[in-house]
Amino acid sequence: MIENHVKYTTRARYFTSNNEFDSVEEVVYVLHGYGQLAYYFLRKFKSLFNDRTLFVAPEAPYRYYLNHNSGRVGATWMTREDRLTDISNYVNYLESLHDEIKKKYNPRKITVLGFSQGAATASRWVAQGSILPNRFILWASVFPPDMDYSFDIPKFNRSEVILVCGTKDEFIDNEKWKSHTDFLIESGLKFSEKRFEGVHDIDIRTLDQILNSTHEQR
Image 1: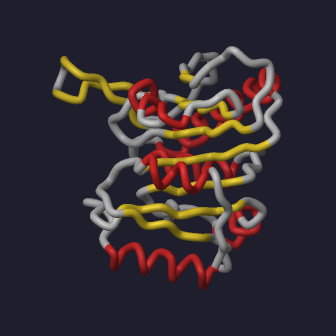
Image 2: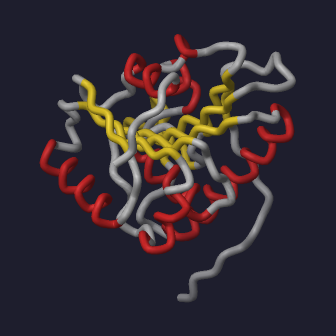
């Protein structure tokens, strides 16, 4: 059998914190994790909504039932099957979304936050796309192992890079966290790190501190 691909036009949905303004100071892209939906993920940030900042939550393109064939629905950015095609597709999707947001709101500052599986997605977007965020936040995750660090790190070093993780994260223990940050330092990435008392989730107090302050990079 021969594997083939065909190009076609599709649509993807996203949610925003508001659409009442012609311009905003900052756009914050928040990319959800595995099995989540953008609408519910965006609700986590509701206490930070204001008239100067637009929160944008893209939804992963592949939805599925979380429990067999009925009930709650979640979404994933990709699986291991035909993964390179899926990565290319979602990078193109996020690039198109960013073009639309820029034209509509003309932000002065861009933040990209990726949570869990969404952090790997956000990393590949910044590495492979044209977006150059002022601030990049890798939350409850590590950079994907397929990154070309020799090529990608200079691009990431043009942004303020912040790594965030709970001290009780179920998927990233302290040993794995230290091993990854040590590797990034050796690779030449400039970043700061933020730990909070908590599990594998968004901690709004920590994020509020990040969005309203700058950090000394390592």
